[in-house]
Length: 411
Image (cartoon, rainbow, N blue to C red):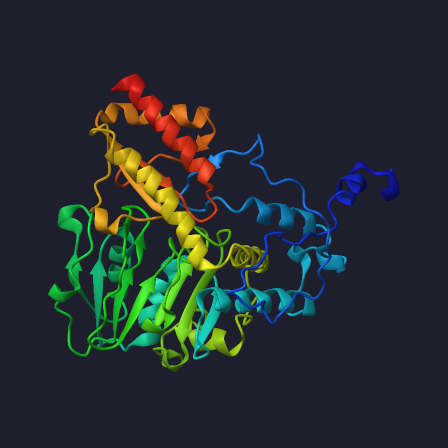
């Protein structure tokens, strides 16, 4: 069969013209100065929740905005008239350079990142940064402080033991990771090179609403599961790092935002791929980066800006969380959230059923209603609903209606 008449050709002919995200950009944000090489315009299809799509409450990789998925679909075969897919582009070609530069520009706009900070697009997940941070920020004998509010900050502290002298100055393990400490009670170590926190614990659903101030050194935060979910004063941190697969992209990309004066002091044994200076000097292109993942991140950043920026994003997230937590709290004990109310996560909502034997049935019945990935993490059990930026209000409303109906049947 000739190419001109093949069914594959017909398939691709329907998907070669990209379209722009259609929501108006808020006047409080300026358009990015970096633009992709070519931008074509067509009218996007209706963006109602498709009948063949589920509400995905997974903790990560997680649901992505439908507008972004449809945009990526339309550009997959022939990006911007370049004659090739982003999947095929050289990472050093002008096409991909325009993509990564615009992604960084839009992220800087979203978080209002000061110019004295570098933005790095890396690989290896946030877990790789558990080693990279002490290797870049201190010597083997330097003290560093860790606050442990859940599984991820605990893992970070344990990994740091290989490369410096970490001190766990507070741990919530004895209380099953349900709270954040009072900052005034923290006994920080003089001379500590940094204070490390996990801004939102994905497994246990604990989120900092305010941030501690280090007595010495800088504040370092793993923001993997609440990255770009709300405004953050970047200037309060020495380093912010995040795996993108929760809120801003697919798995495979890690973003590091680091104050420039902290770069360039890596320990001698630091592997080249963990040296922040190498990546900063090469604009995140020292080796082949996760190109397609970065492209998707760029589409998400553009989408968040068009929603009005992170102030509006946070409003939406608070509304969704309030609906879900209220349903739990008003269930007369049928559902219970163990986390202290003042630090409940807007992103990850863990809860249990009064009758634990019903939790398996809850997950199965919800899946029949096209609500999936509600099973709690294997280390803690129960139920967990992750309601990241891209989870629509309709998804949370459907879950809440299901919860009330399930309670009526089994209370």
